[in-house]
Structure formats: C-alpha cells, structure tokens
Length: 410
Image 1: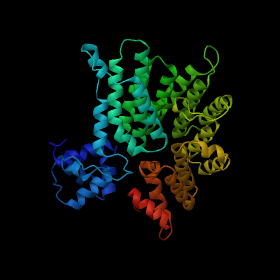
Image 2: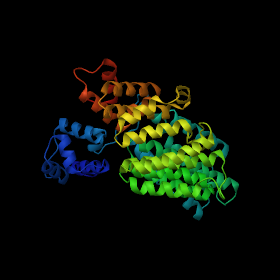
Image 3: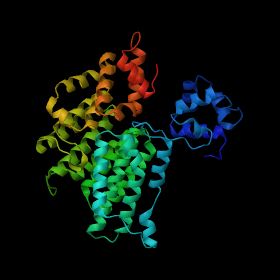
Image 4: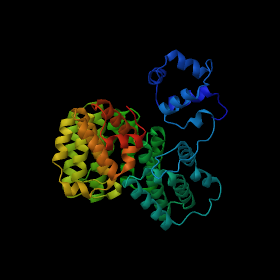
C-alpha cells in the first residue's frame, strides 16, 4: 500500500468500505467524475482539508492516504485502528498447522494457560471491552494457532487445542463484525468452522455456524445465512438420536435466533415467527438464562432477539412493546454486551416511531453499560446521526457530549 499512488489508496479503502464511486462522491459533495479522476491519478489531491474529509468518510487515519503507518491512539476507550486491523489480519494469515505438517512444530503454550486466556477473552467481549480485546487478539490468535499446531496427532490434547483455537476464531469474528470489519469477520468465522471439525465437537461447529451467518448478514447476504442456520439447526435439534443437554438446547436455540435475524433482514416475517417459536420451545426446555458455549441463550435473550427482529422488520413499536414486557431482574442479570446491544436495538426502534428523545436516552443508557457497544459500532453512529438530525434545536447536553465522544456530527 505504501508504494501505491494516493488515488489508488483512496480507491482501495473506498472498496473496503463497500462504497460505490457515486455514494462516495455524494458524501464528499463531489461528482462521480471527480472521484474517478482522483482514483485514476488524473486529478491531484493536494488539499489537506479534502484529504481529511476523505479520511473521515472512509473512517481511516489520514496517514494511510499518505502511505504511512497511522499513529496508535492511546485513549482508554479506542475501538480499533488500522494498525490493529493489520495485526489481526496477519495473525489470521498464519497457517501454523500446515507448517507443522512438514516441519517440527515449536513448543506449544500450555493448554491450561490457553484456557485461562480464552476464557478471559470471552469475558472481555461479553463485557463490551472491544478496544482491550482487539489489542489482545493478535497474540491470542498466534498462541492458539501454535497450540493447535504443537498438539497435533488426533489425541485428546489435539482436540482440546483445536477447540480453543476454534473459540478464538469465533471471538475474533464477533468483535470484528461489530466494528465493521466484515470481510475479516467472515474469514475468522469460516476458520472456526473448519477447526471445529478437527475438535470433533458438533456443538462448537453449530455455534461457529452462527458466526459465519452473522458475518454473511453483515455483508448483505442474509438469504444464504438463513438457509445455513436452519440446515445446521435441523441437524442439531434435540430429540431422536440427539440428546437434550442444556448445551445442545443453547446452541440449537441460538441457531434459530440467528436464522430469525437473517429472515428479518430479508423481510420474511412468517419465517421470523416460526424460528422464534422454535427458539422459544428450546428456551422453555432450558428453563433459565445460561451461557453455555458463550451463547447467553435463554428466555430473556429470546425476547431481546424478538425485539431486534422487529426492528429489522421496521416495526419499532413492536420492539418497544417487547422491551416493556421484559422482567427487569432477568434483563439486569445479563452481561453488559447483551444489555447494551439491546438498548442500541431499542434506540433504533424508538427512532423508527419518531421518538428521538427516547432513542437518545437508550444510547445514553447503553453507553453507561458498555461504552464500546455505542461508541465503536457503525450502526450506533447511524442512530446518533439520525437523533441529531431530527432533534429540534440544540440537542440535550448529554446527547451532545456523547455525540462528540463518538465523533458524530449533524
């Protein structure tokens, strides 16, 4: 990238952000022809003000447009910068297990240490501390890959190492998707499915499927996501030859919930209702909210997904009604990421029915619970922009302050 002309760098990042030349031009207030000439090098980019505006629209550090490494941010909350993205990408590009097939693998890290590190990473994610997690992910990925390569051989230790690596890929996929790095999220999720087969754990493969499908939905591919979720859910459904352990109920239920979210993105309300009904039956059998396979599945999470699906279908009023039916103690018992995610969905629901005051309040509540869930997610930035745009007069000071922290203007 550092050897490319500046126009080619603009084209590269525009493509990464899934923007057409026309959309990019509209956001810049320029013509499509102007953008095309810049990207082909016919027109020079020599105004700093324009470069900073382009960097802002592309959500990158302006130093990347100059072909230089961006400076790391040092604030405690920062979400993810391009240095971290590239370090995670480099870690995902490693193929330690293939190298170990031809050469002796290096001495792997102890599995007990890996268990502690993976559990800590899951909790970091479920507490919504995305900046901390993305800074730790490159090393965690390298260590998990080294363990998987070093304990090869098909025995219990090999399966345990593969299981841990599969979990790390899932953690990476989940946080990358939230932060808008959908291509990398898909790659990590796809890796997790492959590793789950070596771990010989159908339930790990099942929950890995939900990560793949979430990435597909984020990339604008909800129909294959729906089909894959339902197909694997049918394979793992409790009953018949399958047991009815809480772990299976949790993974099965999450497959149905994520299938419902994909169906909602398509606008298929009948399928949404069918899948939520099936997930409801699993939640009833489970009896309470649990976190098997880090799913947070149970009756409360079911209702959170019911509200989220209503928002995706454009029925904000139904989402708000669902929220008001929630049992407050059960909701408050959920980990911060789940609650803040729901409040973000609720903010979208309130915005859909024109209640921008409550939409802003939900963003503030979510920010108090898990700031990264509100300040770092592109969808939250869209909601805040909508709230600011539709607020008559100056926004309330808490909203204005949060918008400033998010870097969102009218």
